[in-house]
Image 1 (cartoon, rainbow, N blue to C red):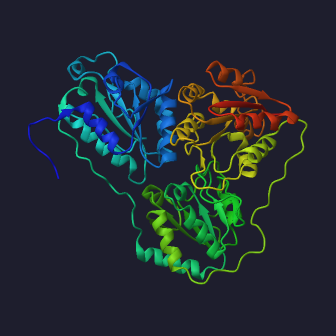
Image 2 (image 1 turned 45 degrees about the horizontal axis):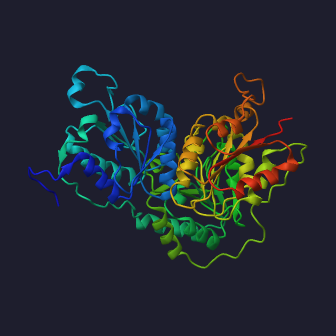
Image 3 (image 1 turned 45 degrees about the vertical axis):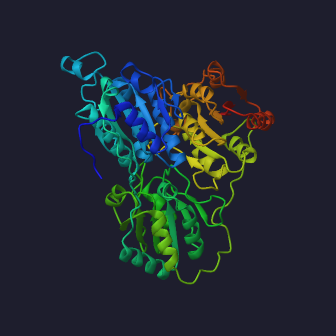
Length: 526
């Protein structure tokens, strides 16, 4: 029901905090600025302010917090300059489908006519197109309703960041008490279309599943495992997926699809039905033309993101919540298929080397890391070794950026750790990636985040060198860095290790310690 009348029960600030409390958004991520002072001065009891030393770090922390908690996160940025600093992380949050409610300060309304200092001239245009919705309310009393709508918009599928610009003087002005409401976002798939997919699965001689981030985001992990086991379908991970949606130690796990048409066509060849679950069809990174789907294969896609359905270049697409969709397919399944005789993917062997390789470092991490912990990864040149030697076997157990931009994982790991008391987080990082957001270590220390940061230091942007065929590429060598020294300068305990014989002991000490800590692993590039 709506309310009307001229009586005002509270001011804008109190109304906004009541909304945030109602939605469980009691953590505010921000970097303090003068145009936002009324918001974070004298926080109400039960709220905490998580400080980041740069706005891109702030948004990435909120992104990780939202994805790990499964609910929206609240961010406060400083006018146009702060939003500008944060744009890379806003883009990552958009690609990650992270429900982040971003607010930014605007100058006082009486000053706006004169282009004042710290004025955001086009406040709602600046973060576009990488927010789902952006608004600067016309009146102060409209701010609570705008934030309420932003929360719902952020959470509705496909989830993503939203933006509200708020003039400095609005916070103290009177407004009516907000209407506290709930919005459900699970879309029921079309029953007739699902029945057709069920019939195709029953008729297929050799179906295969391709899973993406949407499976984990929609809470459909167990249904995916059950569906694969029923049809004994091999399971591939969609190219560049930012989450883990199937246990990687499972016998039906086949591996990770490369981001090009030729390899996808080759690896999926021979199957007569390809079911893509929670992923685009397909994400490509470099051009290697081929026929997709391969000849003789039908392709169906089930996603909760209508953009991915509309953008698929082949096959039949169904829009619907993955949990509801797969539960329906399981209920309609007939006689289970006999089990396959062999594992779909062989365990990778460790290469021999005189020094520490990424494979050795990751295999050691797998040996030592606690069961049930979460991995946040941004080590582009070692992604293959992560796939081979650090298997993920739990839902919501892995997060990476879907944008391809660097600087996400270090602060995101902090946000993940702060999403739940006692959460154990392992951040696997490259040296180049770490430098985009190294200030996040300060936030980890300041707020007691239980994260072990493991930096695989190969002295440069090795992934870019690989793309160039290891030809001479300018600007890719950054070898005179000490991430351990940078960590210690921010109060984060750190060690550096370069000898294979000392690797396990060094990592063991780090895992035994609590709070934030960093291990810089010097990779042998010889």
